[in-house]
Image (cartoon, rainbow over all chains, first blue to last red; front, side):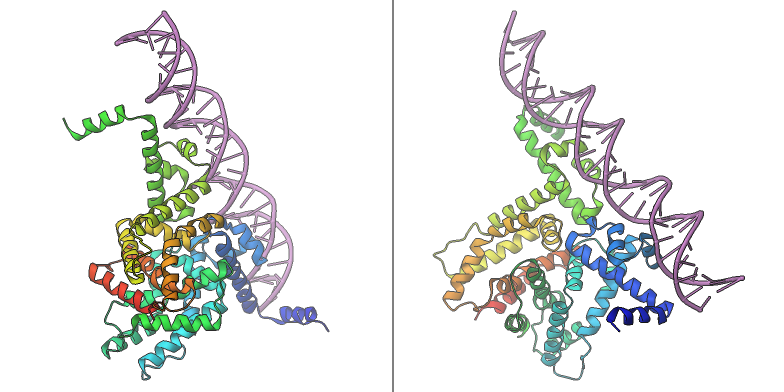
Length: 205
Length: 205
DNA sequence: AAATAATGAATGAATGTTCATTTTATTTTG
DNA sequence: CAAAATAAAATGAACATTCATTCATTATTT
């Protein structure tokens, strides 16, 4: 009884709803992979369909059009990412404790889900996703902003704009992931710790 | 004798070489503007030509094709940017003095030439420019890397990877420019000073 | 048997690029 | 210096191709 047989049984006994979920996920995976390596302009729906193991027409059962596909992928990835990053958030804990946990979880997620991280970096720096969609994505950052505000109030964190705080603590991680993906540079655990120190040093009072 | 007349005289007396330079620059300007607001995939050569006040065919006199256009724009903008930023570099001066001057000039340039800054941010985070072209662009950062090395040797700057140093001092500026361009956030002189402090705090020992 | 999901060839609009022609600039000649 | 000849630059309509999207048909699930 080999693995293919088991997979076959799974596929046969699965409800349609579950199969659809799998198919939709395959399309999203393919989008992440191709947009990351070729860019939005060079990823035709046909290639996307082929990589996802699906017919071009099928994509249009799950997404309105190409723009809608990118928008939805962006939003869903962003939500998944922030859910993971802020799962341990407890407002009653110390500011630095919360911040440190968030920061390390953000880094861990981006290192684990490189395709998603690269995709977000691309979307956040280009006009490939619609502006209103990007706005929606920002909402999910609330816990981080909350912690930063608390830190400012308590005099632990510099009293500077949220944008500055975000710029100096979070965006460097994205840059480092992009670099790690692009060449030999390796973000090992020691570098991660050094990065955290730099992040904290840049905003602590 | 109005301005149009003067312009007309200029155009008439100008050498062909100078006219070509102006035309080429117009194409580059148009590329920056359209790629920034619409993305590479949504800027057809026809629109580019129209905005540059040129016929589509003319673009192909100055650039091999669309990809070559983007590559060349990237390289030339990068070089212009770094030339400006490192013009005051004097290896014999103090590390912090050199670093501060470089940092402020980088910030000033990006604030002054927003279109160029946004374009670089887009190219640095997506596969729109060819990888070998991006590599070429990195060479121009040598002075900054040199100063950082000197700082590490003298124990003034943390002994961490160049990538980390760059990530925490320079990339936040790009992010802030993108944000300023996207909404109401304003990078005023006070914010710039705060940003510099954060940059320095993140890497100084 | 009915309903739902998936297919993929066909369509038509959009777009990168070419090239025969025209316009403009420069050089040569009378 | 002016006119003719040559060279260079620019044009933009035409072309070939690509690609997003549709829909009549087939396959699968309920």
